Length: 83
Figure 1 (cartoon, rainbow, N blue to C red):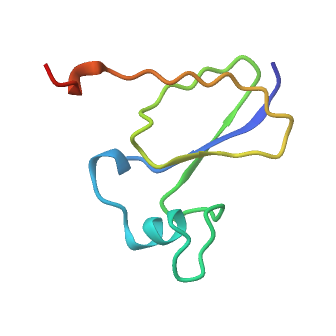
Figure 2 (cartoon, rainbow, N blue to C red):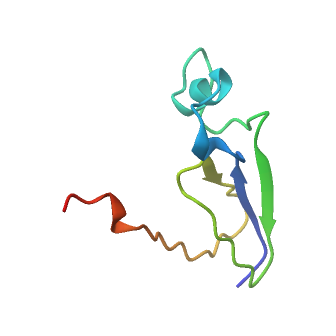
């Protein structure tokens, strides 16, 4: 595997509603585009062999540009199913 640009994520966004900026960028409202960096976003570069585990319920996006060679695995709990 190789080094790559990694991920941008917004800490704590899985526990609250979007800010006005986050909503406008995510939905491309008011002249914004979805690829814009967010003021509240943090970038996490990944090196060869790195493993990143996070909640997909938070605002996040992959940062492309290098030869991205990532294996993405989505895990979820079935706790929300009807019984």
